[in-house]
Image (cartoon, rainbow, N blue to C red; front, side):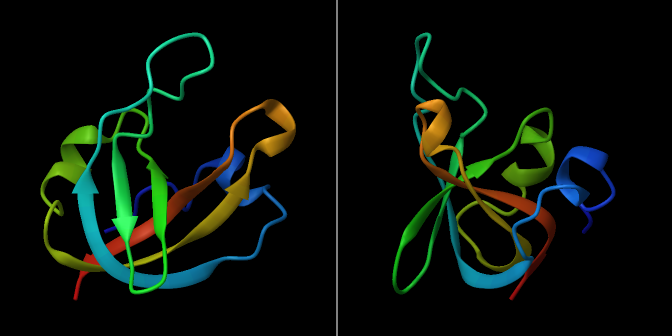
Length: 95
């Protein structure tokens, strides 16, 4: 299922698209001025846990929660803006 792959803001990010496999888990998004409330899920892989950006797509991501998935996306580093790394997903499918 395509998620953000055709969005201009996704396509113009210079980070390369990569593939990850893991399980999508619901998480409590940080609340407050420095919080990223759109980070409602985490992709848990064998090696890491990546916060996932899901703005306005929560319903689509809910159907993939707690299941093995494969995603194609970009790992975006927002450290310079006071945040951290987050995964922007271009497409997602069950594994």
